[in-house]
Amino acid sequence: MNFKKSYLIILAVWGMALGGCVQQQPYDYTKLLESKPVSILVIPPLNNSIEVDAPYVYLSTVSKPLAEKGYYVFPVAVVDRFLKENGLQTPADMHDVPIDKLVEHIGPDAILYASIEEWGQKYQVISSSAIVRAKVRLIDARSGELLWDGTSQAVQSSGDGGAGLTGALVSALVTQVINSTMVDPTYRLSKQANTQLFNNKINGLLDGPYKEAKN
Image (cartoon, rainbow, N blue to C red):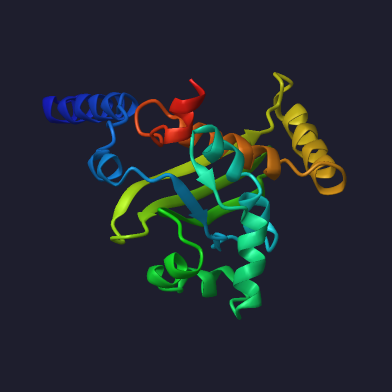
């Protein structure tokens, strides 16, 4: 092996090692600290997946972790019904509403927008996985500025349990049958994804005023 080829291999290995050691960067909370929102309005999320039920399953898992962070969260079901009664039948319609109109009729300090990027089961030849991934943005209702954003994600994978190819095939098949007939893991994964995102110690959402009052 010549020197040039050896040097390239060393560089490649070094690059992979560095890639595996990438650290999460602390979030810049300047805008959030300046805004100090108390109440948050959650808009039903956009759906970029093929699962039609994903937006409202996801929506049902947002309020609790936000409230536990110390914010007042407008009841998501009431907000959804109010928007639909006013002619906004889809999340896409709701996302297009000018912020000043939401402030006028509902009065939040901040608005949480989300888009679902992946949702549901993925089946390969010898494995299967369930995934929930959504991008979220918290917007100041007075200025329209971005206060905070992040990506919530949770994955549940089937494995071969050490039983080789046959075990992997059986495991994937069993997972597919169970998830399609008995248990949908996406609700649990959505709860897990949001809890982890909001509570991340490096770039999660800062505690709201009611969290301080409880402590």
